[in-house]
Length: 198
Image (cartoon, rainbow, N blue to C red; front, side):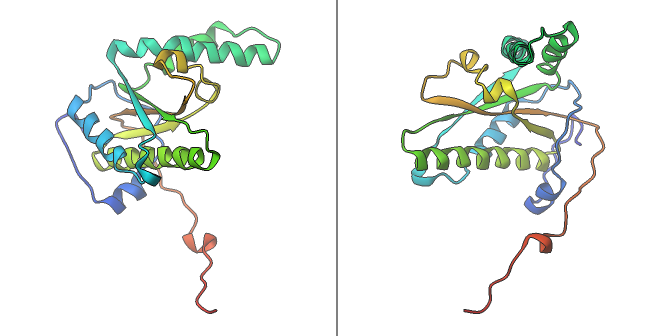
């Protein structure tokens, strides 16, 4: 990963092949213009009829404290489903997770009453997320898209001020990292069928 004084740029194929889920971050601040560049890359994702369904909510510095209540609410909800109470360790971990990377981006989407359009919008949001992740890798930054109960059950909705037509899609952790990663993928031939004759 890059240091705070470097600003590398790898080609698209290299970025795609070297991008991996990073879960250990340095607390080095990322310049706002770098984050804006990644959001712009996300914004160029394909979206049918140019609905631009994505919304980006960026949390840095003390702003990450706003996420703690949602994360802890999800922990309490999960414990209640099991008929138990959350432990102090679970609640503490939920808080720490909100500060585990210097930047956290929540991606939400504007839904649509038309089921097909809604599915297209959801897919478009994930295309935007992948654009952001690849752009981050190209710039030497680590990233990790995450969901979980606080996203799936919309505990984060009140924090973001989401309307009834909106819902969260994913949480992206972003930052510098020294975590070692290893590229693991099966050969593409295992998942490919060619049709060359009628």
